[in-house]
Length: 114
Length: 114
Image 1 (cartoon, rainbow over the protein chains, first blue to last red):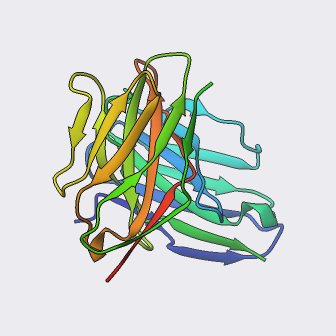
Image 2 (image 1 turned 45 degrees about the horizontal axis):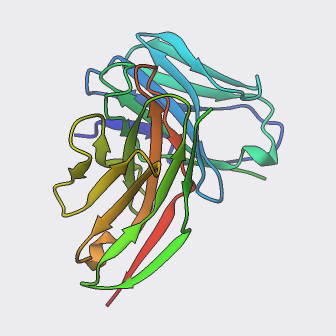
């Protein structure tokens, strides 16, 4: 059973398009996250939701909009894609928002913008 | 603000040799410290963490890390590496008592050669 799953695994699209990445966790966790890993493997948190409520919102362009329809799902919608958005996007979840909890990561979505 | 510095971007080592991956952090508040491992084309997995108590923490697969507050370090060690340990290793820090916002280092690529 996959604990944290993401779709699609690969996404190739052109500049200016709008795309979405979906994330689902079946661990019963309350908290979910989106991270961006750039071409140099550097990982940076983008957003976090706890029980569908936004609790972490880093400085990302407002072209990125997370949506959490329920606590098992956290989707990422990106408008007007740019070349610099090319990266691997990881979803993660944890039992709660406390820093003592381990985060469980999905397999990643490799986004390529041409 | 917090930051993490991983001093080596790549560490080549022969199988069965010992290895140390270095990590230093900077923070004005108390922190929790983590090591995550990323195998090729996979998401991140928690290797070990320091929250409180004994400054020496161990993982189930033979890695250990020691929290040194005076040197603000959390170096990862293994006395004898295997080919299967080849992966990217990320050191991360979060504020004790805050939201689960991980700040990652740039990663160290451990390449184990036969």
